[in-house]
Length: 361
Image (cartoon, helix red, strand yellow):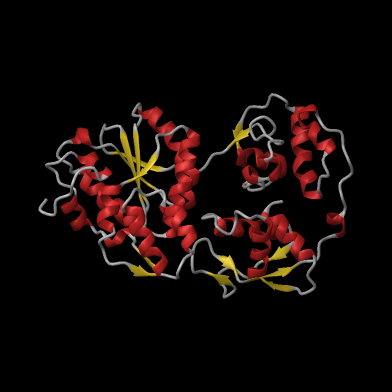
């Protein structure tokens, strides 16, 4: 079941009209053990709330009002109002004949939500068995009149179980927003930077590097956008006839940044990209800067996420983060970066941390 389905099931057992959204979030967490630790959790919950509001199952607070948690993006409602479903909505669709590719459906105890998902796909396969593959939102709009209906189809239990195929049954493919990439030079490597300030500083430094042949791609992206969009860079490499052999990431030294790095590394490996490795030459100096205080995070999650860093950086991060201290990229400003990246030394080894940075540069 999806988070929206778990929330719907929870709402069905409630009698109050107004319900705190934290209870709905707990219901979604309880139904999906991976959700509480996912860096995408907030976006997933926001999407589920919007989906249920669009389906007339709940009402969200007024936009721009005080009923929203604006502490992070995307905003989440502080409460929702439970709406009484229409009688017709509670009726279970009658069994139907399934086309051969969906024959598995005849042998499964399908919920109403499953049937509402599969029925339009069944009709489409029957009428257009050789349909051209299109982006998932386009197929979603064609089948359901809602371009966001299939936004989380990749995590649906029928898909993860290997029964429903996005490629073969939906005749569709993911189309995440592209990674922002800048070809600063011809070298076969790319550095991804999470924060806009650090990206801007490094772009200006690398744009003026004295030996252009040492400079490669610089990309901007972080969080769930990076995880979703990383594979899109392959098409850009092909279009520019400028592939890469090394892929580096420089992000915040906090739990979210490290967990995002691990997820992005896995996504890149699945897409056939070179291994995503830390820009250790930047992380090392960042760890010498003054940290800032944040709420204490779980030590076990920190250790697991920090394993993406090489030693001794991983040990230093594990010593810092459980104390409620993190290091944002803004702590290593442009003047300091200019001192660290020495123009009289080869660039890539400095980014890798394989060549000593000299403060005199």
